[in-house]
Image (cartoon, rainbow, N blue to C red; front, side, top):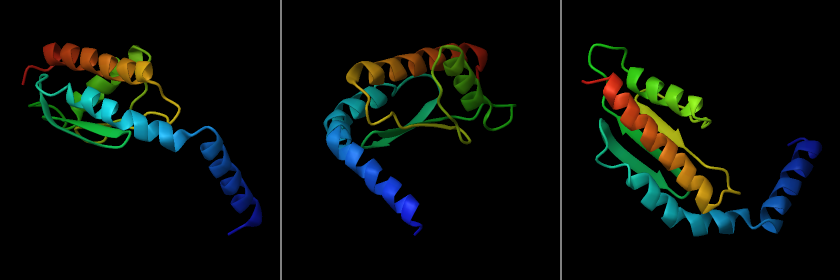
Length: 125
């Protein structure tokens, strides 16, 4: 409850309101859902989930490796392509910035798709 922290929070909310960031996120959510779920059926994808502009892709563990080896490999491949994601266990969670446009969501999913397909040739099981 420090007054300076409260002022910063109120100023941030004003920026969100002025730039219509929540409205942008709500408008993009159905498109994001479609894009993220388009990864269904790719090698080793076992689950896809999303809510709003958040999404996650869960992968089957790579047999004979540390449990998160496949997600780490996909993370590394995305990073090498200029996309910074994160991973936790076998899951790659994503939360694009609220200022994103459709072209940015396309880039995220297309890069992830490419990394998943490349990783599948590296981890057979």
